Amino acid sequence: MNTQSRPLHVTVSPTTRQSLANLQRVFYAARGFDRISRVYLQDARRGYLRWGADGKVRQLDELNPHLSHEETTPAVNGMRIGAPVERLDLATVTKVSQAISGEIVLRKLIDTLMRTAIEQAGAERGLLILLHAGEPRIEAEATTVTDALLVKVNEQPVTPIALPESVLHFVLRVRENVILEDAAAEPSFAKDPYILERKARSILCLPLITQGKLIGVLYLENNLAPGTFSAGRSSVLKMLASQAATALENSRLYGEVQQREAKIRRLLDANLIGIFISRGTGEIIEANQAFLGMVGYDREDLLAGRVNSLDLTPPEWLESTLDARTEAKRTGAVQQFEKEYIRKDGSRVPVLIGLAVFDERHDQGVGFVLDLTERRRAEAEARESERRYRETLIGLAHANRITTMGQLAASIAHEVNQPIAAISSNAGAGLHWLGAQPPNLEEVGQTFGLIIRDSMRAGNVIRRIRALMNKAPMQTELLAIDEVILEVLALVRVELAKHDVWVQTRLPEALPLVRADRVQVRQVILNLITNAIEAMSEINEGDRELLISARTDDSNYVLITFRDTGPGLDPNSADRVFEAFYTTKSDGMGMGLAICHSIIEAHGGRMWAGANHPRGAVFQFSIPIAQEGVDRSQ
Image (cartoon, rainbow, N blue to C red; front, side):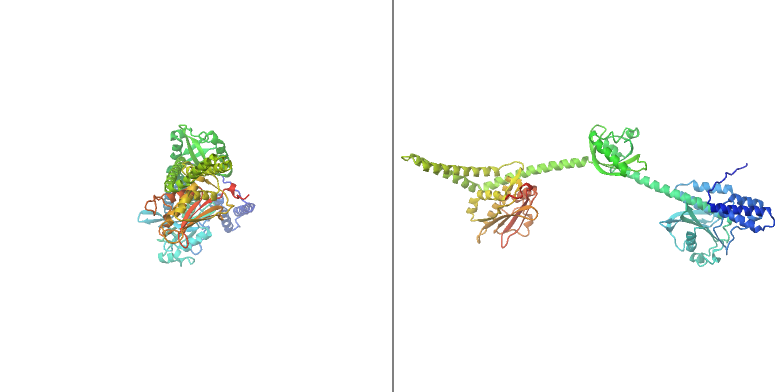
């Protein structure tokens, strides 16, 4: 069967073209004139080999058979570097090519490569060395044991006991194949530790180069005899090395793609978050179960093309979604944003979504979706818990106020009885002045004025008590703290006198207003004053003094301080006085200070306690200044 070879079209530079023309002239001159020495023919053949003109080399060999028997690249001291490719047997080339190109899985490819190299070279042992981040590492080792060929794929470092490092580094540097016919006799490498110890004979080392990039080295050796690796074998192996380099690089890239796909698949299958891949039209072409479960669809709906991200989007979210998609196409990704999806059953699911595109034409993108249902439910439960907490606080505060008012019952009765008794007395006096002959109308008028004053005084006392006993949600207003302090002091005046407590106040005239609930602030001040009265009633020596002061601090807060001269706080438990149900009183509930602390925190302030000097305790609380009432002097 006749075979025809297709012409090889090669683009060459002008310099190369001129060199080939010169070689052509040398060739025809050598053919036409017997007087031209055979040296010209040899020079021509070498030149054609150097330029890769294999057809011309074959033509020369057919016309001058003696040339093919001469070594084209003679050995120098038993070493050949960069030996050219000779004519190869077509069957051998086909077999080798199919063996290497037929594998894409890296481990199988390496096994096939090593077996083919050992068989074609007639080597005893072989190493595949690949570069990792520029450093050579042994990827596989093949050895012949009796009639068996063993290939071990196991990455390990390059060491002097594995191969002659001088040969390896030489090939890595010059990027040319090296054949040592008798390594032990080669001066350049004879002193290598490996060659000295193993008495190495035949060595063949081939660089693996693809697209101008060196990726590794194929090392072969046979220590049975020198000159094992002939030119014919080295030619097959050189072709094998070239094809192996390409196959190894392709296999590496294929492995990286498989690893990336496996990572993406694991991410999809993990179902930690919803993930989908969609086209520019919104059609979702791939999604994990987490996303499908989120929107209520199944895989059959996905395969049938019934899941579209735009169709899942409610009308009120469509514009912002389209804007996000446009931004993702423009920049490659978009920051996460919240939206809703319409589930298959018509219900809605709140989600947090991020988008990114991952192809050059931006025709496809990936979405990462987090279901916010549980977070929204938790937020609702937190709001409900906060509401119940406020209601409980109001109830406890109301109970505390009732308890406090019970303790102040005598003081309240005195406050009410005084104006009532004055009204009764003034009414009797008024009747007396009316019964006089003639009636003393001037005295009657003055008496009626006193009755009105006392009735208003009694009414104010009752109103303050009713306001303090009120149970209602917090209603804030612009409030003057100093006025509230004076109101509470008027309510407990009898208790202060009863326990011989002297009160001193330091309240600036231009104290800024605060925004607070009047009833709750009254309760806090009342609790702190009554606690001070009770604490100082236990001491028998020294003055009982209560200093109440107010001022602004550097943080735009109004600071109120209560200093008493009682027994003070236990240093070991001072930090617990605001805990619920903690009390040092034998009949106390431990709720008063805890409620006061919660009230102040609800107003955006804070409350704390400490020691007074030289004795007693200090209780303080702060409330933010209202921006609309900073300066009362204006």
